[in-house]
Image (cartoon, rainbow, N blue to C red; front, top):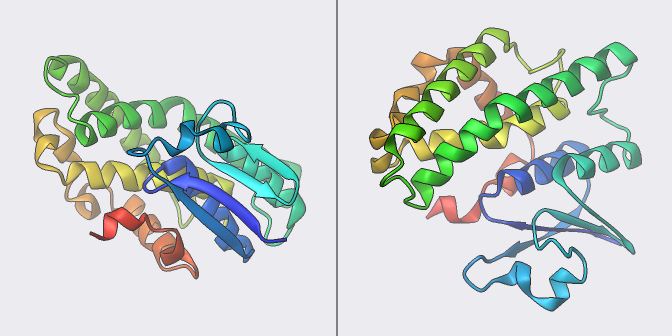
Amino acid sequence: MTIEVYTMSGSPFGWRVQLALEVKGVDYECHILQRSTRDMKKPEYLAMNPRGKVPLLKDGGFIITESMAIVEYLDRKYPEPPLYGRNAEETGRIVESISEFDSYIMPEGLVTVLAVYFDRIAGHEKELREHMQNLSKELDTLEAKTGDWMVGDAISAADIASYPFVRSILRAAEKDKASEIGLEQVLPFDKKYPKLAAWCARIETMSGYENTYPPHWRD
């Protein structure tokens, strides 16, 4: 049976799952849920995921949620190419990279990106600028550590975990309201963060990437 993925257009969490499936070369059907029609709160979806969140992967009768849990499931079921390394040391470094990203960069990035996307800036400028300062420092750290890939010499779960959030930060930085909290300072990205920009380009040229690109970003 074809794997089914439930996500929302632009969800960095759902994007992780789609990237993993494309790297693995696994056929899947993608269901794009709509916030405007409250698709995630409908009874048929809540029956699969009572939290009413995305992403969700359905593989026959097996249902799993949480983006990196799904990525690990796919890596076990489809071992090649491996996303968590081929030995204990590689696995440790990959998980370490994901943990650092999810602990330090993702929270700051989500706060600033969502503030711009959903016009949540008014009255929170000072707080958001502090988040932006933290984000800038973390991006500097990530830039210094980045090689061709986040870990090792091939794409891994570390790249899949990080890329959707970095790309979301860039899209938000291009919005007019980004200047109200200093988010525009990450631009021009290829000048401020040349290694990260080259890393993004490397992911964006891989086979299947276009299948994962958020549909509403094309408008």
